[in-house]
Structure formats: C-alpha cells, structure tokens
Length: 110
Image (cartoon, rainbow, N blue to C red; front, side, top):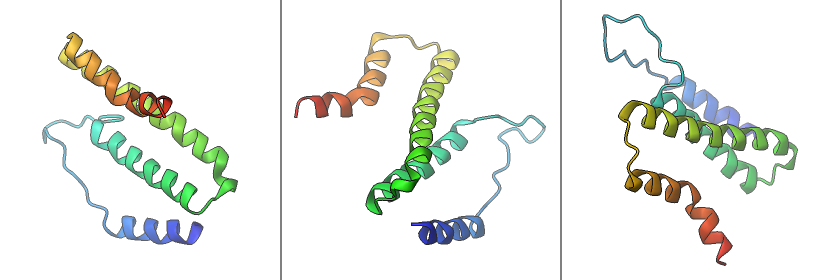
C-alpha cells in the first residue's frame, strides 16, 4: 500500500507542471479553485480505491477525513457555481441533487 503510494508520488512530482493564470496581469492567487479541488478529489478517489483494494484498515481514520473533505469540496463547488451563475432553476437543482444522491438512491433499492 505505502510503496505504491510512494512510487505514485514520485511519478506525480516528476510530471508536475505549472499552469499560468488566466489573467497574466493579475497577481491574485485563487484559493480552492475548481482545477485544484478537482485534482484533490481525484487523488482522494485514488486513495479510496487503494484503501479498499489493499484492505489497509490502518488508514481508516485518514480515509474518513478524505471522505468528509470530498463531500465538503463537492458542496463548496456547488455553492460557488450557484453564487457565480445565479442559476437557481429547478432543472439545475434537481440535476445537482440527482448527481450527488444517485448512488444512495440506487443502493437503497437493492
């Protein structure tokens, strides 16, 4: 479990690239931008899969923190979308709700 993560970290660090800001004249750093949170959520999904694949029960508390962070970042992203776009249509709200809840709804019917 840990060896695989170390190798993946080395490969990730070796392929790191800097992305310039959209507005080159701005010195502003966007905290928790969408690409950043999507990247973190992807790494957390990888950790979830590896946790279950290797049955790394010693990582249980970390995985709980990752799950909580993942849910928070999903809600934060939805808040930013609603705050920026002002799209409070019923179609958008139902679409978002179904994407977030579809696994729970599907699993409850099994």
